[in-house]
Image 1 (cartoon, rainbow, N blue to C red):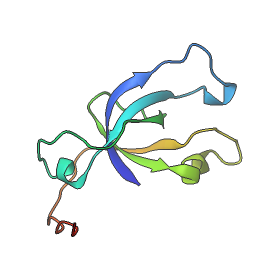
Image 2: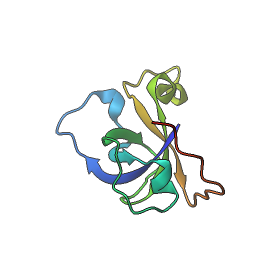
Image 3: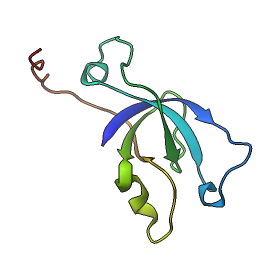
Length: 102
C-alpha cells in the first residue's frame, strides 16, 4: 500500500459497465520525503485510481494496487489495478529512516 495525492479526475466518454459507481482519480504516489513535509516535487509517475470514497483534489489517500485492488469487490469482477482504500486526515512521521546506500 502506498500513499498518494489526488491531482485530478479522469472522465471517460464510454466505459465498461463494471466501472459504474465510482470516479477515476489521477493520483501521484508520494515519497517519504514528501510525507515528511519536504517541498520536493513527487518523483513517481501519476496513476489512475478507482475511488468510491469521494476523495477530492489535493487530498491524500491510501492506495492498494495490483490483484489486491480488486479484492473488495469479490465475487464481482472489476478490471482495476489501483483502489483508494482510505482518505487520510493526517500522516505523522516520527523518525526519518536513513537514506539507502548508493
